[in-house]
Amino acid sequence: MEELKEIRDDQIRIVGEGGSKNPLLRNAWIIILCVLGIVIIGAILLLCKKQKEVEEVELKQPEPALFEPVRFPQPVKPQWIGKEVDSLTAGFVEIRDTLINDIPIKIYIPHNAEMSLHIGRVDKTDTSVVYVAQAADVRADNGGIVGAFVLNGEPKSWGLSKKGFCASIAGKVIVGVADNTSLFEEATMSGGYFFRQYPLVKDGRVIDNEPKGKSVRRAICDRQGEIFMVETGSIESFHDFAQVLADLGVNQAVYLVGSSAYGWAVDETGTTHEFGDSDYYTERHKMPKNINYIVWRRKR
Image (cartoon, rainbow, N blue to C red):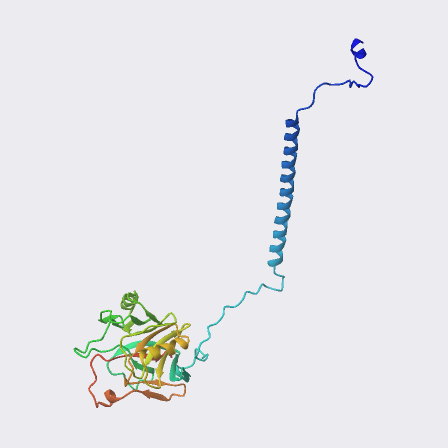
């Protein structure tokens, strides 16, 4: 009672528990509640996102209906120069004339025919032959074939004098440019054919060669998997000829003996188109013993 008496008239006494609560404990609970809230919100957002992804996949990949099978896009067919020919049609060479960079060229496209190599005179009475052109060069000093050469699985010459190559193995023709290639050995093992010549185009790019003169030029080319031969209608340099082939869209190209080298092509009507000088075939000049040709023959 004495304590009550000690309170003045202008003072108030509060009766209850003494002391204040710990503020650190209160802050800890606030932090814990905030973290729990963030975790819960994050979990809800993640579930919503996964549900949306599932819905998108279902929309993108609908199940095919019973009578509506899924249609897949067809592969794009290469735009070949030659026309489509029935596989039962007798082999022939399609001949097309065109002008590129003001240079006239003739394109020889074999159909239903296979390529091989031949050494010596080609029999002009052989009706299975639809195209003939001289392939590898022949040395002036000893008459040997320049560069590696395989004839029906038998190596006739070795060496890397020129980086361009052409092979015919199991009915498939490969044209390319490389210092080393396993196709020589493959042709030897499988009874195929192989020769080397000047490279003109590699992967669509022009390759320059040392000879700088001008002449009628010829080449065997690969354009989007279509194999054909090209001949200029005027005398041209190696560079200008290679540029014509690149502008034609050729991927790979290797030289064939040009100038007056003799050859011929048989078109769809059976007409024979000759090019070059036929002196070796009329016996006005002696034919080199190792003169060689690419020969396309009918498959049927």
